[in-house]
Length: 369
Image (cartoon, rainbow, N blue to C red; front, side):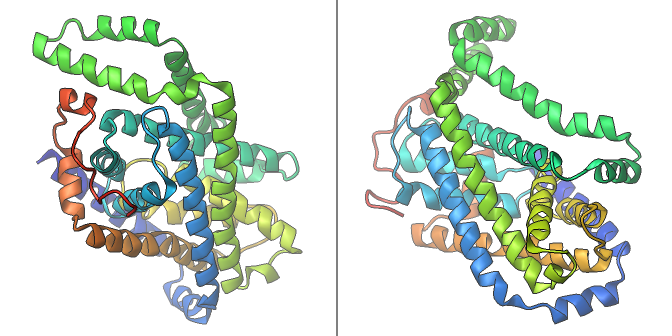
């Protein structure tokens, strides 16, 4: 029942945000822009996105390696299925699907795997913030910040603080937990001690598995490599934004291709941070609004709001639909259903079973997806 409520809440929120998105556009001109677009750029754009997923797989492989070495050939399909699930399910339930799927497929702790996915998201946010900070050294972004502040009725310093400080604070906390596991264990044991015996035992096992998932953050060299792998993830995804910009002739709006590249990197970064709230499936609605307004408010060029709306609509569809199709093909080949993975991933996990390494053959056989 609770899961159904979250599902309908996510869909309802998407509906409201999409209604706001279309209500603030000239719909006739929007469809005209969509009709006039050159969709040949979508094919190479999707290829760039698939390359970005390869770097995501390499980064996740590094986060999992203290538990088990998993080949890229086996891990890549799990990443795709996780993204497919996030694109279809609200509240980022795809993260649960991915952690459950890799746990069943590779025999690793599902709880620890979920923690590594959380670390991934944190590195994503920090990398995007670093990209924005680097661009801000050369491009004045105060107009953009003030514009978002006016539209959200939140003072821009507070808005920036809300979008940055939680990520940095969480990163510092995880570093402490990973590098002081004994102290973290003592603190966590004190927090769960008031629980009934059965719940306390389960909670301690979950915490043990969660702390195990943080092991990759104990090494400064690994952290540097994780950041190094995060950069191409987002640069290749920005390449998708860049190519689709040519579909809508945005290259003619900017003075040169360098300014267009800066604009799409900023749109990529701000839209993904802004749409990271775990609510609507695939960030639907929120992504469109944030990406469109970023493009409109940027001081580099005067971009028409309707043209920007058509552009971000196609960008988001290109990010979502190929992953949905590819993920479903992978699940069909594995004779697994998303519904089953979702139910199992959201179901109650037995910590004792999660802590044990299964002795049975992992899902999908031994030689790749």
